[in-house]
Length: 245
Image 1 (tube, rainbow, N blue to C red):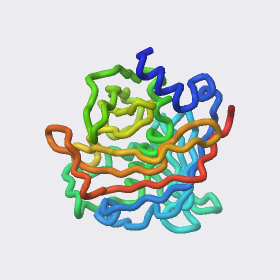
Image 2 (image 1 turned 90 degrees about the vertical axis):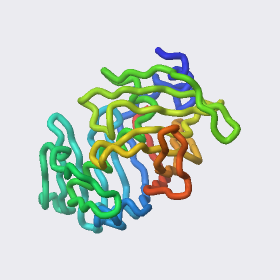
Image 3 (image 1 turned 135 degrees about the horizontal axis):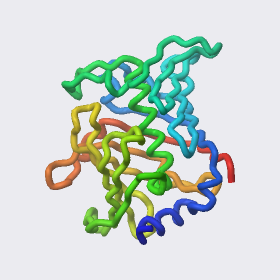
């Protein structure tokens, strides 16, 4: 195992304990202009996300309105939107294939299934990192460090396999001297592959595991310098419960 990855895993709760985790639940509030551009400005303003820690199975409840929820499953990928009685209101297999080929960040609309797919795979990967880096066919290796804000951040280049629904296969994760995640870079395929610098803040410990609780999503230029004047997406997490160990 990569030495940096080993240190990061230990700092976030330890791989042995993580392997016993079955479920994560967190209260979530998402904001930023991105959601209005999709036609859903408050879709995840106040919701609870529940996920399987080792397989991409994730639910948001409520989803948009109090009596609805969304569920994402894999093999094959499938989104289901249902009511509290369990009646299916909408569903789609291969949801990734439904996204428009052209994307304007200010005005391209998404339907409810597309919003559910994007948020589901994203939150599953955010909440399982860094432990997801040890999952089958995921590759992680240290690359050159990064200087920012007077600090030196060590970096992991991570490649995800096709079986992992994600923004894109190749991503970079940045860690400070305490092995806390400070940033991750990716280029979401479903939003036209923009260069994203996703900053993570306020790490807190829940049930022995560390999670960043404040996420700010910016764009970066060709040199990797982020435009932090605008966060197109914000994510705030609290009341995280880890079940298993």
